[in-house]
Length: 169
Ligand SMILES: *[C@@H]1O[C@H](CO)[C@@H](O)[C@H](O)[C@H]1NC(C)=O
Image 1 (cartoon, rainbow, N blue to C red):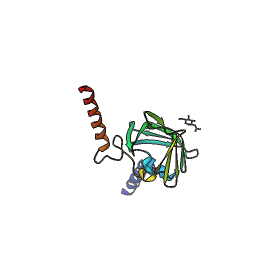
Image 2 (image 1 turned 90 degrees about the vertical axis):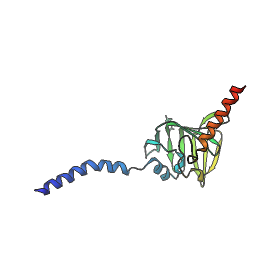
Image 3 (image 1 turned 180 degrees about the vertical axis):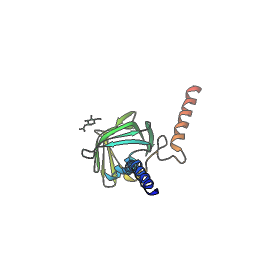
Image 4 (image 1 turned 90 degrees about the horizontal axis):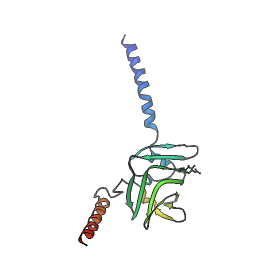
């Protein structure tokens, strides 16, 4: 008598849990980056979901909120939706990631990996960075300096001294 019940339960639990297990097996966006030979640090923490067409490499990545931080003296801004086309060592037609050059925010349109270097291209100009800078994913607001929060506090301190300057004049 208990046998059919147990097998019933087994079938129910299998039906209930197999889709969840399948979903868990799909790679994270950071694993996808690595599959294409890119470091995880190319994307910040806080990615909520992504879509990837593996036949064309076209992708869309969604962040829970727009994100900005400073790495190696560069101000970077990630929008809530990032699109592009990924292939091994190469991301083209990128949209949603910006870097501040002088006083302007410009789109990073292409990222290429060349050995231990990552090349970021904003159209006519490009800059190379050693891949070690991208070993871990930066966090919104404080980038890679989140333990002591230097990035964020530095910005606050600057804002404060700027305000004082304005008020004292
Ligand atoms: C480039 O991206 C845009 C969206 O940002 C898309 O509409 C367009 O089709 C893409 N072009 C190519 C060549 O993939």
